[in-house]
Image (cartoon, rainbow, N blue to C red; front, side, top):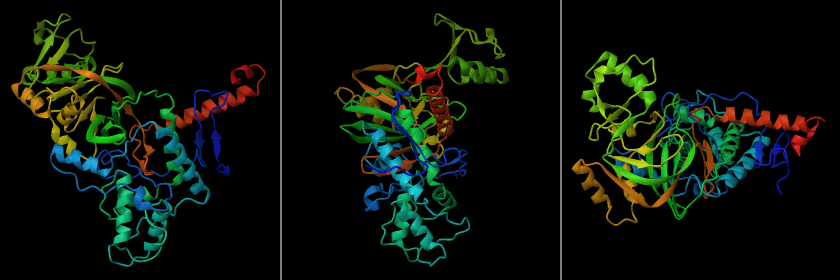
Length: 462
């Protein structure tokens, strides 16, 4: 059994908090942390700060690190293929929570030993050139398990570049092997910060009663990726565009019930009240240009000129966009009934999937190469091959295809996780939820601790 470490508090599944698993509160929980640099690839670059971190120290870091991916390709198929090539290990499976606990304990041990060194911000690194900080970089990567321990000294050679690639690939950074400013900033994030990300991710899984099936779909919001999992292996992985910081995608579990080809789009009332109304005030022809119609409560068309577009009232009408190439949902919608009324869908702006920063929706998840996902979902219905899906879309006719067998889907928010091959991944806390969650958890723990010592509230701790 691992010996307790100084300054580390293990909040177990106590009588006061019977619904919580052990949460590891590391040294420096309330300490200020470094501002994370913007990261460089899918789901990470852009206006929000990026993340990164080290891995559990491993005897064979090459085994623990995912394969470095080629530069993002220009087609949906090649992008999803490149994403799948990173690793076939699921982000989320039945063992994820336990692995996160194990990772946090390993990182806590590392924190007690002083963590990893800080690399000077002005440090220069170049392949084949001896630099003043090469050995420091090697030590940093050895401690995080990215470089073998017997490579502790020497100039910036190919072994060191490969270790940098491993570090980058695990952290959502472009695996170039070059010490870019974002990579350097990522390496200088403290181990305490990484522990807090693991704690927060673990805490989020506590009440997630997801029913893992033989086949299921996972969207990890901070990573901006969707995974189709079959027999505990990722068989499809796609870039996704998820909610803006001001309109975040929710965490949820649901069942995928059907696939809609050539869908119409019923505009949410909040968007109709704000964005559609604003467009109509500026340009009365906006609705007709966007192939939209206004409907009353009985789905009967009404004259747009009779509508109050001031935006001051909740709309008493519905705006619906016809299906077609212009439709905001694109050619495919994946139905997954839930209380948030969100879903997965195509888009008529597919160029956005090439962007590094993909937090740009109103809460739904736009899926790159979504026709491939639709074919996988419908694979047990021989009629609906990929070719058949493409042919049906080409007709332009609206078609709703019910699932013969529903597929579970989970939208999760993990900024830190460890896969079965012992690889730890970290991503940007794009919605700034980690610290908020841990502060609330600490406050709750303090409340119950005090309650147990007070005669009037001691019963609450039983």
